[in-house]
Image 1 (tube, one colour):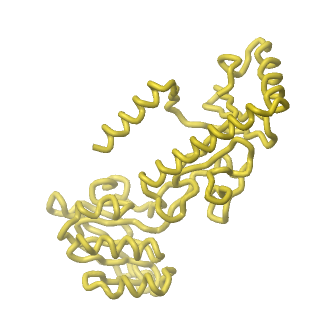
Image 2 (image 1 turned 45 degrees about the horizontal axis):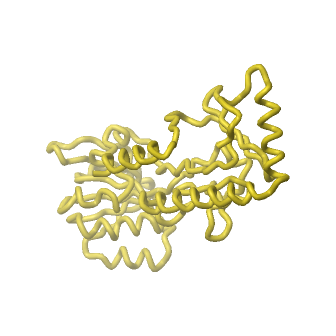
Image 3 (image 1 turned 180 degrees about the vertical axis):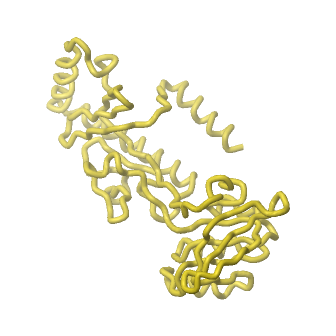
Length: 285
């Protein structure tokens, strides 16, 4: 099972000397020059490193309607690829109008008895080809221009009710469903470093070519924080591995530069003499 495998990964990392701090990073200061020390704060506690891998991920955008949080994971989902099999032969809805919504609907249609795409406008942001693919599926229907006002539990244990409102007429109606999938986009969690590394218009961190390099020396980025397309656990893990290899190779390359090594050790030695040095030991990760 997934949780058991995750724990095995963690245990293996610990056997190789990894230290875990299970807390929220609150601030980062990323050095812009080779040999600079990157600083990461967890509250008032400061951590220093030669390399930093940014992997804060991306959050699913939510509707923010009543019942969404309460039924999360129990009727309301944000990933058809992950959860479609739980709704086999049940009517479902997709909320959204872009390519992601169409892709989710097409995949979900393989499992659900009927998929209804609910969108606030009659026009869709999805590309023409994705829209045509969705329209060609026998069990995909479109409901526009409607918005979801709330989710409620239905009469049966696996029944849900989506309360809908027509944005033009104000007419309200209830739709009985087995589950709902929200596909209105993602929000990369790059805020903590967005003013220090390059991001695109949506806030995803930009990396160099096929690497995980961000453009700052010793700073790498991986996972859904840089991924517009796949957003799967296995692809995030793959780029995490790539970032670790890139970081390891970067450290090895810097160790061969006497000027960089001298700058690092000078800074570490100077601050180690402070009454309250901001790191636990003179060694730098």
